[in-house]
Length: 367
Picture 1 (spheres, one colour):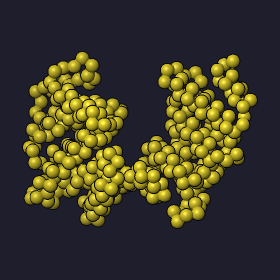
Picture 2 (cartoon, one colour; picture 1 turned 45 degrees about the vertical axis):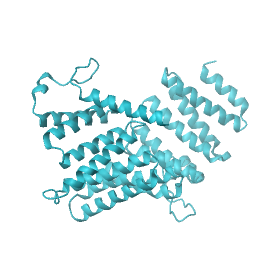
Picture 3 (cartoon, one colour; picture 1 turned 180 degrees about the vertical axis):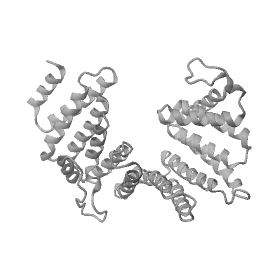
Picture 4 (cartoon, helix red, strand yellow; picture 1 turned 135 degrees about the horizontal axis):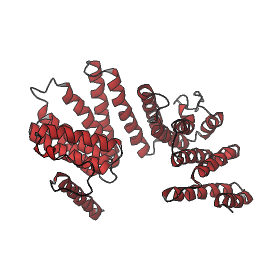
């Protein structure tokens, strides 16, 4: 474990050195133009910030991380060692590390550095600066996420609570608008849900997933692709709580119908339709065959998880749909097809459909 941690830190240092190096690299995409070498630091900072956002939006997280490291260095040059903008740069870098698996410790370290800077910054003339307090909200949330990844659930919850309380105060004081607060709440509620789910407390996680989804639907729309990851996490919680019947009934209806009661104090299981909603949203956006296959597979697995004979037809239908989308795939797609086929055949075997199992193999292998 110690050796693994040292390896991560070593890799972390190597990446920082590579990121701030002025040596040109052959494989670096979107190289800085020659004129950028002579730009003022603030212009370079703005350029690096824009590139970091662009890389993140296209899921090129390693490249984004390099730009975020440059942003920290340039922010220090532009604003000094004790300005709140340097804290913001460290928070952004911490978020960049959280996008890469296994670098949560580095994220925590940068969040701690940001906290140290902000502690010294919240004095005149920054004590009435809304940006400082908005940065503090981001800091507490980012620290909470880092601690969650490190499985320090109590500390994670404490930081998320601080972020939630401060964002509410900013809204009440008119420092942020309602739409901005909703965006913040979405992320905080989702993180709270993940804290509870990380502790196998599905009952406590469920209402937080519900609230997060409601906020996403308010800000992005009910059919937004941004709903899909939350819907899928929601479905996992629902299955863990044993709400299979409500879930599969919604699947069979073809569209969500809120209102099935769970029999607990949690109220209606709006999440019963989670997998179906996610699948319908994906299909409505002209997905690739691989995306459609993965989505259909998740619905099939939800049906299988119920363990109820009346849901076998649903599972079989979505297994077939999933494999149909990948039957001509190559490479990674072929590997996914074989994995889904294994799940399908296991399902058929468990449900006693051995003859059907053989026919399934022959059909999808072209024999």
